[in-house]
Image 1 (cartoon, rainbow, N blue to C red):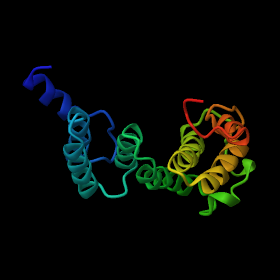
Image 2 (spheres, one colour):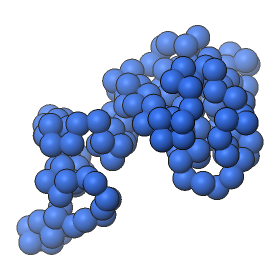
Image 3 (cartoon, rainbow, N blue to C red):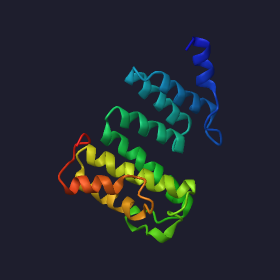
Length: 169
């Protein structure tokens, strides 16, 4: 990618909506800087300063930390994503009390699906980060809400039941 191509790529509007263009650019620059973790963190910190609490910024942080195996650092961002979606859906703020009938979890609607997927992600990174029991609780709740079984929450719970906490198992 030439410098002009990289600049065009960094300036593209992919997320749209209410995410400021400057914050989106910082997210894209973080992607371009993947080989330099300090630069990634700096770009994502700037995106946070420009759009604090924005869903896309939390997703970018989560992905960055998850793929760098910083699981416990990723957990608050997964938590923020399903808290944002939970408010949007009018769900109980305590995710442990959410019932399968509280939202259209059995549909293909984006908000309930992202809620369940991010809850499963939260549980997974907790388990991978060593907070196994808290992760198990989150994964159990995600499995309860995941009518389709697409999140993989039940599969991780099954591995935990068999005593396999390593993702390579």
